[in-house]
Image 1 (cartoon, rainbow, N blue to C red):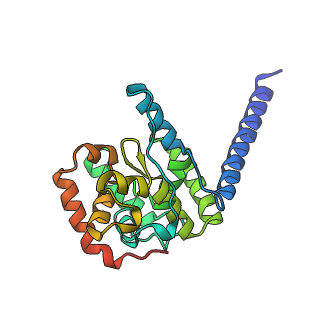
Image 2 (cartoon, helix red, strand yellow; image 1 turned 180 degrees about the vertical axis):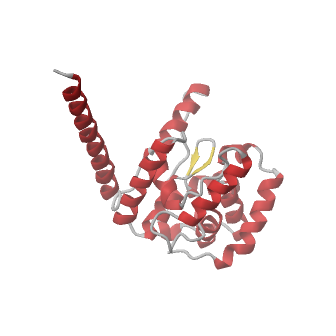
Image 3 (cartoon, one colour; image 1 turned 120 degrees about the vertical axis):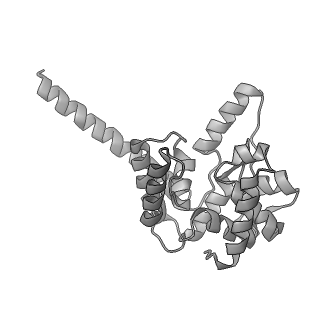
Length: 230
């Protein structure tokens, strides 16, 4: 077999494998339209890290329905993570452009400009590793999610799978972990504080008196009433 024919076959096989992978992602997304995800990619990675340090280690996570989550937390998370959540179709290109410009000025990747839909895609299937290939895959999954789910379902899944501390996932586990209450009873102040933790939840779990966390909480609280939620 000559080199050219071998390369063609290799490319064809790679494309078939890629198509099968996208099909698997889509099947999971369709299934999760009506069924709740259990163990996500991010949860699996967190569990492995915890087990390596403190075996046996169990994650804190309990699924809770959208209607049983405090509206204050929904508004706080949208305010902090994706102010145009109900308006865009999965990607906020304006936010991504601003994040890119900020990163250029800083000389490092500090902000990604990811929407809640993108974070759902990443948390469910991908790793925290940053690369252009991973970002491209994240975008593909995001568009699948937006095509299959409505905004309410996207926010419900996000609030239940988001990392909120070391081994702490989802609004219910986080509300119990930090405030000893159910997610339904979070006050606006508590909700704003939880939303402020999302950029670095494991860090703020250890440093809950960090000045940035206090300032960010106050900022979210001021903008809370304007947030639009599904």
